[in-house]
Image (tube, rainbow, N blue to C red; front, side, top):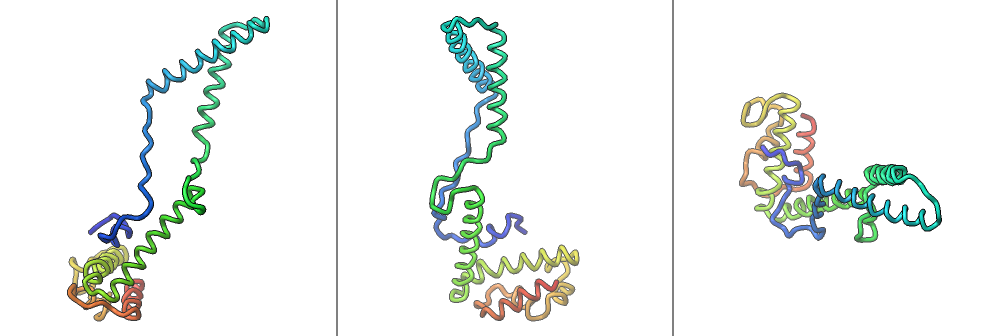
Length: 191
């Protein structure tokens, strides 16, 4: 049984979606980050001390370094809690929630296309829809009754009903009409 989720269950060999996969962000090593921060604080210290001396103000070097280090720590903490950057893309894709909604819509549309295609092509029904219905029935039986169709066929047949059992156990069957499919899905929901 697959545990990859419904998206994996309805996967087809159709072309990939129009959205490119997000590129993983490369993280710098801790040593490089620390060295970068030290260089940044040193450069800022030189500039601040030079500016203070140009204005005939003398401040202890340790105080300037401590203030700049504190300022850098505050900026690092603020960047750690800031919201994710906005998505640069389509008009509706301006936030992470919009991307998630769009991904959900794309997945649901793919399922709809698969189911629509399954009505006319019995091969698509037998290859994509029937195994998903079988896995969903097994999952419901496992969660509610502690059995699977393969583990206890007699009990599973009794719980599913004769019509749903015959549909799920016949992989070479032709495509179903929408009302028949709804009947079998309702039988699985009653489990």
